Amino acid sequence: MKDRLEAFIEYMRLVRRASEHTLTAYASDVLAFLDFAEETGAIVDQLLIRRYLAHLQKTGQAKRSTGRKLAALRSFFHYLAKRELVDSDPTEGVRPPKQSRTLPKVMREETVESLMNAPDQVTAEGLRDRAILETLYSTGLRVSELLSLKTTDISPHADELNVIGKRNKERIVIVGSHALEALKSYMDCGRPKLAAKSKKSTDALFLGYRGTKLVSSSVRRILDRYVEQISDSMKISPHTLRHSFATHMMDHGADLRSVQELLGHESVITTQIYTHVSGERLKEVYDRAHPRAALGGEKMER
Image 1: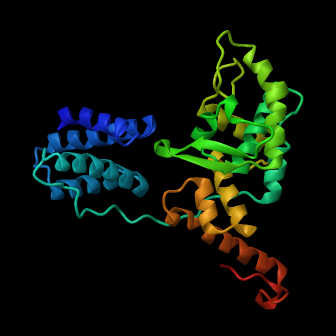
Image 2: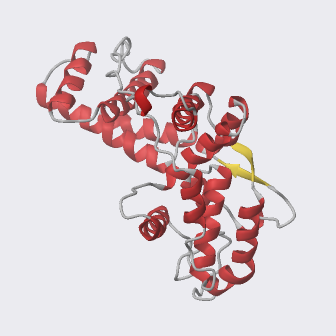
Image 3: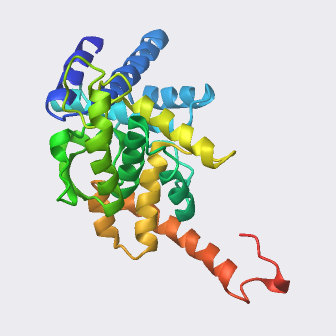
């Protein structure tokens, strides 16, 4: 089966158009299971799959991580079964561990405002950072989608972007006026200074301090730096801006289908989590605003 893993990964790359991150994770997850099967000397069947999942949980793997590994195995064995390279799919009927439901972390609107104003608008890096933060919050883009943008994708006269998302699917996102203004300032005054630091030209929109294409780890460091400026305790990731975008849209009346389209979710079920986040926010507003929201003048614990 190890010999067939390479062919499976190539299939995922060429046919399913999986990202390099996904390909690396799938290869690692499948290989780890095959090593486990080899060590135990057992037949690869449904029982061994269940034993492997139990082994993962015993060794401290998180339920979400275990579920992801099962998804990799399911794709691998489905690939083999479809080509009649195995008698049956051993993952069929095996359920992933039940996930504990957690709501995504969302920033308050006033905190977002403080974050957007944190970058220094005098420096090229500051102009870039403001454009990155504004664009992430304005569009709900994933960091990978943000960093795939090219200079030709930006027009000061258009409020839309064509974005290539997961599995190379194209979608249109709307860009707000604050983000457009930040992008224009960066393109006019910030990016040319950064681009001049590199001997090689690139059409990547966002550049690092050496004038080369910015990477995702740099976006995380940029965000961390400005979060530290506005809060001593807040910990967020770039994806928090995506969560905040979706939740604030729902808070202000956007319908679920529109938010789904803007986020690039394949299923509306994925987007529905934001209806629950908005519901929690409504409860907070009610508790703060209604004079008879709590008994005895004190807030009831939820």
